[in-house]
Image (cartoon, rainbow, N blue to C red; front, side):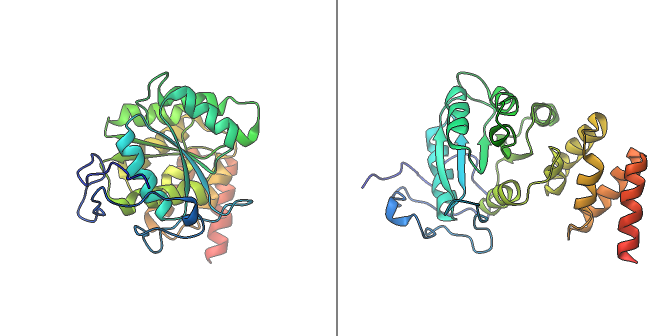
Length: 252
């Protein structure tokens, strides 16, 4: 059995609630395929995937140690993870496997994560072009977040993060996706990510935005509902006013 090269001091997965790993954890072999691993976090397991026992995630990450640690955590919580070490490999895997989730680092050899996202979104097959895409990248600032959304990402997770935050982000994008992109990012707990996503959506006004915002009015988080109402008022279209009116009637 091959040991994963994990030290417990690997970058970007810190935090008070981080899971401790020693480098002696077993690989997730085929015999584990139908069960969760020792790093399962109850309540944050993978969502169901139509036609698959476990949702399939393609993880595009240049750093092998980080990729192995993320795979260990994700597979312990019910995902099947395939790793792509560079941009071309990521696009090829996504096209070949039609994953339930693509997780993309922006710093990839071959071509960067922005190009990976653009290649996927430009694919002629809607099963590929509509793939849920989550960017996972170290903190680079608002400009990188905006460029990711302009490229077509659904949501963004800034490193460093705690393990539960990672698993919530994967569940959010793989199981509770909202479109048009990056509408899902309006449910991101990170205020900067929400703000950038909202600014982009209000600037670009993609087709279906009003109805997509209307769906978010049923979110349990009052911060999300308040953000959505404000966005609909700022849109000021007849469609947005109709969504607000329907929501008001439903709550009366």
